[in-house]
Length: 338
Image (cartoon, rainbow, N blue to C red; front, side):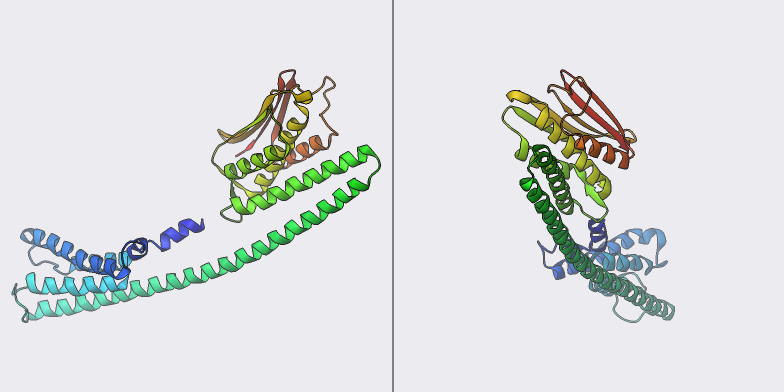
């Protein structure tokens, strides 16, 4: 959103060509070029309209020059355009001397109106520039505040993570130790998701989720994968709200991590595929592996904490979750409104 606004309010030609041409050169080019073009067009129309409304085209040129290149370009268009009209259009033509009284009065009135229009455009542009400068300053302060919040949030996650890991280390029971280690893994996953959101998002509400999920999968693969197990990702380029992105991130983390840990025992080779696609009015998240599948009892692999987390975030997304598993692998399909 911010970039679109920036393009709208910083679209004048001197700013666009600032890296290639001096701004004053662009202003002169516009301020001189536009009245010459308008005057040439007016001469071509002279056989049809004669001296009727000779000053009218200059109003358009002044407004166009001021909008395209600023008030100085508009002033140059006014001066040069009025001079050309005075000399070559208004009777007696081709003379710098006085014209007919009515024509002179019209010329003076039109010039005053043109100056007023130019002043209004210049003042409007000044107010826009001041408002933009104020907005940029406020955004800068807001971004600094957000960085501080992100830093403090990250520290809080690390503190909780350290406490859980310390408790896991001191636990005597292997089951308790394993459960606490899994809790620590989830805390780290949420912390990583929150950290990456700040980088992937262009605003406070929206996130370009494909970039975010590619990085998340890369981190999961780097931390948990082993030779012989391949992780492939395919994500449509779409923008989602931050809350949905966090939930999807946790789902991907849980399902991929679970598959990496349990789908390929005894050094078995295989692959895991993750995709997020736009399917009509819905968005479809698929995590599929070609591993050994869930055991015949139908219970989730591991302690069951991951399954409960998946169910929780599926519910928060108001999604439908379908899981299929056999000896050829497991496929999770989660669909929710786009």
